[in-house]
Length: 133
Image (cartoon, rainbow, N blue to C red; front, side, top):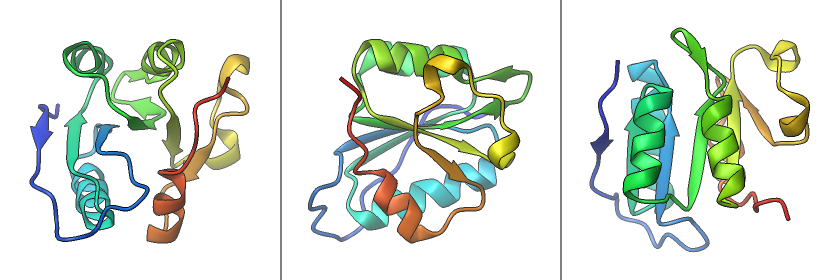
C-alpha cells in the first residue's frame, strides 16, 4: 500500500494547471511516473495514496483541485472516491488499464478516462477537464 507522499515541484510556469492534484493509484511505479510528469507540467503539489480509505482521508484533510483515479485498486474500486469528488464538484479522470472493458457505474459513464499507459500529452490534456455541472 502507498502512503500519502508529497513531492516538490519541478521548474515550470504551471500555467493553467491545477495547483493540487490527488493521485489514487496502488502501483507505486505508475504513481511515481504520474507524480513526476504532473510536477513537470507545473503542478505545485501532488499527493499520492493507494486505497479508498487513504483517498477519502486525504480529501477530508485538504480538498484537491483535481484527481486521477485508478479504477481498479488492490481489492477495491475507486468509485467511492469518485462519488465524493463529484459531490464536491472536483474534476477527476479515471485511469485504467482495462480500456473500454472497465466497468464504470452509470453515474460515471461520461467521466473522462485515460488508458494506461498514457502519453504525456494525454495526461496534460486531462488536467484541463472541468467539473460537471
